[in-house]
Amino acid sequence: MEVENAINQYVKEVSKKAVASNKSIYVLDSFIKEISAKLEEHGKSVRALAENFYSEMSSLKQEDDIILFSYNFLCSLLINISHSYSGSLLNLIGEVVEPFQQFAENFEVTNNKIVGELQNIIDELQEDKKKVLKFQDSYYRISNQIETNDKSKKTDSAHKQKVNVYSEDEIEKLNELHRLQAKSIQDYKLQIIALNSKCEYYDKIYQQHMQTMRSNHEMKTNIVKQSVSKMIRNVVLIYENLIDASREMDSSVFEERFDELNDIEKKKAVDQIERQGETVPTPVDEREDFVSYTDYQRKVQNRKIERLSVKEKVAIRLIAGQNQTDLELIDSLVTLVFRESDEKSVNKGLISEEQYQSAI
Image 1: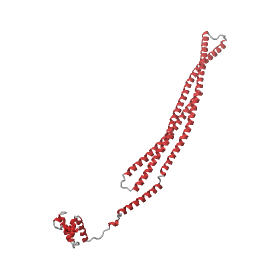
Image 2 (image 1 turned 180 degrees about the vertical axis):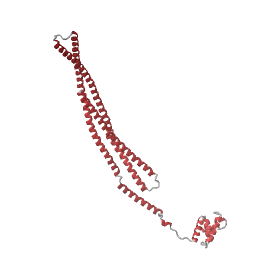
Image 3 (image 1 turned 90 degrees about the horizontal axis):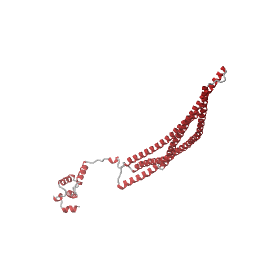
Image 4 (image 1 turned 120 degrees about the horizontal axis):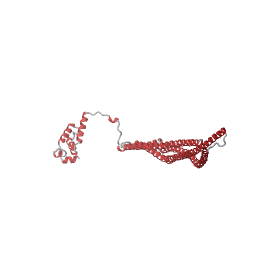
């Protein structure tokens, strides 16, 4: 029973270590998956941010090109970062996440299978051990009866001084006990032989299973080392790729391009003003000059004259003659013309056709 308890206890310890080992693998497996998921989520968030920014930027119809360039530069940087995340994430999944997940699953299956088979071996040996103990107990019990009976008769013989102390019934009973003892010895020995044979058979399987568990543990150590190393390399590579992706779009590049475009925009603005003769309005343009009442009347009169036809303007100039500065006369003529309708002024006799033709 001591051997049985020792090996049973040992298998229980092995089982506990296997469960703990499985858990440690899945802790790392979960961590690797979580890192991968967070990186993917971050990459998608950056891309969504860039796309939303680009959409809003596209709606700025009246904005200057230089400002749109600034927004577009920033948007392109975010998209490059997103693409960098996506490419790095594929490497991480292919080199670390998927291989380690497959290993974790196989590792647990192997450990659980071995622990289960070891426990089955121990359970079966324990059952056979119980059978041995059962035959052993029967053998010892019968032998004890024979021994007890023999001691009792020897005691009686010493007191009664008799040569024949056994009756026929007692002799028959004693013979039966010896036959049972012989059978129990045979059964006991056969059961021991069967148990020992099974122990030797299972010992080979047991040793193979223990070796598999040791190999599995060594594989675990190597895989963890490789996976963590690849994980570190890929995480570092992600940030190196981010630097590479942004190196061509860093602040110095932006400022240089911005200044170049800004100079171009300024030159285009100056050229446009010079070409169109335009000036930039300033508060100085809001200054006022003194306007006399006579000048005011002349402006009003001019606005009225501007509304006349060419023939009507000629007619007024001819009628006024030398009195072009007589505001009252001019105003009367304009008023008279306004009461007439367009071309009818000639037909009413204000001027003749010959006068009009010679005037123009």
